[in-house]
Length: 210
Image 1 (cartoon, rainbow, N blue to C red):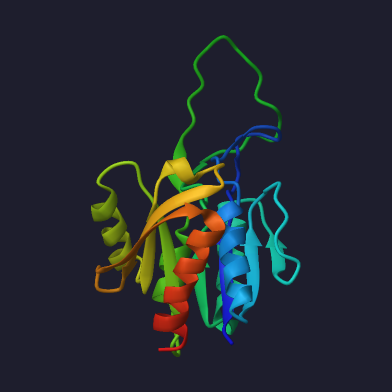
Image 2 (cartoon, rainbow, N blue to C red; image 1 turned 90 degrees about the vertical axis):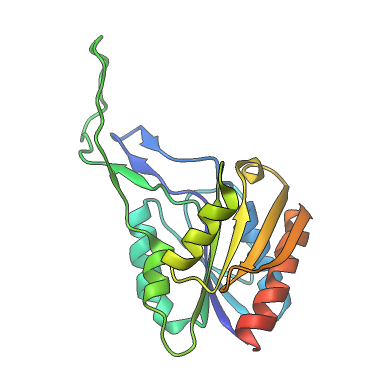
């Protein structure tokens, strides 16, 4: 049995108390990955941004809001886990300044300076110890394979899953799974629960029970 840490859902980066940057991640794929891991007898903890779905009852769920909160939680938990699967779509940017009050209309353009957030999976990949492994997800809109394989290397992942924006808010997904050498292990489409089972089959065989 492995202890698997899964990130899931979106994160939010507030502009003011009522407005924030986010994305369309629903958490469905993260939940499907968790179900598949549990079905194989593994222990699962999910670090999740705000979602409206219900995660499997057998999993431990740690709710977070911002990318920094997800980063800090994962860094704290990861040393006690066998590996991590980064399914979440955390915000890559955050406002430099967050207004303590609701930003009012002035009739003038509003300029917002954005800075990059910490890269959760890259940090976990760089901190792997004692046989730990990391699987990343890469959602790309162009040069898909090139960008996914670049992330596989720069984030020190042991596998990476390439998917596309159509998967967001959808019950289905179409993915390509690459191993650490960049070889394509599988090209899988269908309901997310079936895609997740196929992904976990490879993780279980090549990373957990290798």
